[in-house]
Image (tube, rainbow, N blue to C red; front, side):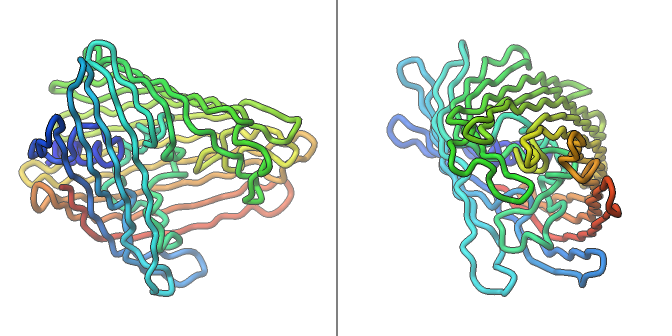
Length: 388
């Protein structure tokens, strides 16, 4: 069950040119083609303070996913491609049909085990990608089902322990695997700054001043009676805030996952300067173009019950955005999102898993002069996820 989940999650989010199917693929001329993906849906009930509970039937943190991939060996190169579509399982809040759909991946790869591989196209971002890939709510809902009805996915733990890696056009190089040690370096499409007012601060200029973002990560995976992975990643991007103001935003993170005798433990921490919170570059700068500092962390413990395969888990995390007090540019000291999730994930076949989760989320603002605020929400979710 664990191998099936790992294969499916890796295919759904990283989508390496290898197949999402375990069957070996279809031979078509020089190519081996495969079709694979994920289908999931959950009943959710979200209750916020002072409001009536909102119920939805929605996709979880993983999108529904259908991918066609191919691979071949030509002229001493391993060549591959992956194209995916990601339809949501929700309708809009009014109950009418909606057309929420994403195309998260479309890329080609080429390389060789002796020198590494190159990826060109759209895929999961490099910075903070391992934070979401090790989040247990990847198989469930986490938070956001009450306010994201009709969207392609829910939020999981995004913004309550780590920043979203997002799906980016990129040109990336990955080194060969040196006994578990590997690294990836890439230039990715730069994002605009999403200001405190919810609009682009530099709408008339090119993203990042016309320059790409630069991202990198390194990881070491190990196996045996004790298995796991440690990683570090970072991002740097020029931000053209006005026609005459350019600044550099940057962030880094560290994480580790360790598994032994059915127990799993994950720890994660990251910091940013001018990279914002929840999604990259959201509220990253003040109206006076001052950088806001941010931090994210979460801890997670899981246990797979012997004999039945049910995985039980609990995780807690926080994301914080610091205010800038110089010149009274901000009226808050910090904004903090806290989240705790308890979940059970049970395989009823090798491809189909039942999921039950309970999540509490609290978004707090510590104001300089005004009364502090706290916005709390609770989400219960029940559903199933199918890998094929």
